[in-house]
Structure formats: structure tokens, C-alpha cells
Image (cartoon, rainbow, N blue to C red; front, side):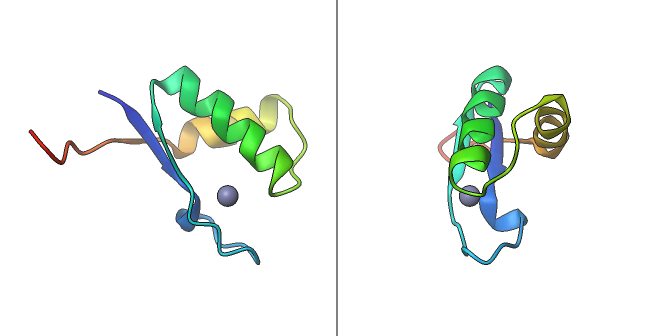
Length: 63
Ligand SMILES: [Zn+2]
């Protein structure tokens, strides 16, 4: 099952609506880059752990 992270779950001044879906490692990597480049977070083990713990299972829409 793919994982999903939704920026709308994390209130910010940017009202970011990005959704990233894919394999867990892909989502963690892409979300980390997004958090750093767009939200100004600092890359590191803490950020990755925070993102990893925020992943949800994707609900298939077209089963
Ligand atoms: Zn975002």
C-alpha cells in the first residue's frame, strides 16, 4: 500500500495544499525536500522522523 502525506494537515501561513503519494521512502524523501525548500525547515533525522510518523495509508479511490 502506498503512503500519503497531505500538507493541509500541517497548518502554515502558506496554506499549502500539496499531497505527496508513493512508496514510504519516496514520500519521506520528497516531503523532506518540500519541507526544506518551501517551508524553510532544516533537513535532518528529526525532520525525517517527524515526516515518517505523519504518513498515512493511501485509501484506493478506484479499487
Ligand atoms: Zn507544503
